Length: 415
Image (cartoon, rainbow, N blue to C red; front, side, top):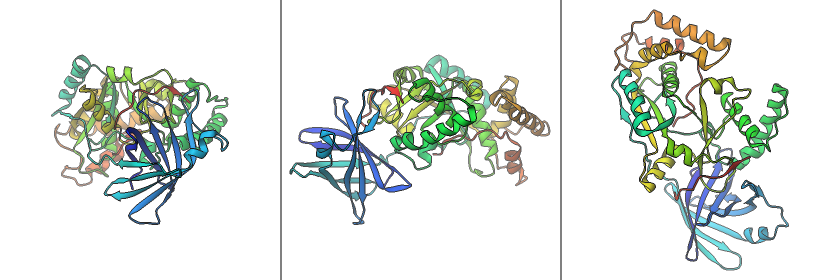
């Protein structure tokens, strides 16, 4: 059974949207998010009974409803709606990657419930460049014609847009907020010597940004306001990982349009939200010089496959929100030297001695190399170890944090 499924519940003539999220380390529980067409909704924490190999049974154990700020919070056992919610159960048959079955209430009412993994993968239509010069033409066109304002680079164009949290098999955002972030806040306060008040949205988002840039899995995706910074990370990662991804041929740079960013960037963002969402999150660069240097901005989401989510929005609304371009990995040396000429180096991306040393290592490695043909991927050199050496000499920057639906309006944001 997949860790995240989407579908609907039939309740008489009404269809209620539903999203089921599980964490890989707790296979016996799932959060069942639901929402009415009018936007109201909540979530049920359910136990999962898999004693029948061809079916699962869901039994509610806890009830979550949005508080005044919109954040999902667990209701106490004496709340009037809890007893009614706990009277439901559902038995679902496993059909491929989908679940299909019935929900039943102890009073006798019942209806159908269907959940699907969205196995049909929808990907962005990417432009393919033949050279680094072609990429620079695309970057200008993306700004002028597509009105892209945020960019993200991947060292392999086969990766999809997926947060580090979802890549670890964690999909329950409410659990992440209640456990992981609370623990990280305690450590961050000790290291920074400051009190972090997570009831303040600005401080809460700063905590998330620190977690992201220091390697803790988060439901955030890093973006930058510069296509060239995105290209820097894409090519650096491609070279560093050339020996472990010898069959990779192209890097990818994504671009998000202004219309998407403006519509899906509410002033307050709520992580544990009852509907599936993706939203822009402006994070203060306070205590985070890397974020400032990288012109960084984040997207936050409770959806595992961000790319498919955005493409689905595009198809429903008949708009273009996400652009992408693929560039041969063989352009990496030329691209990184050109980016250094523009002032984009490891020293500027990672302020401090570590960044300076990485920049110098970068310069040392390429002074002794002739530029490869633009179209030649890493790993096709005459010396079979050359690709590995390139990877070892490449910048030791952070890796691209991606490997790889009745869609909601933008949610409000807060902690």
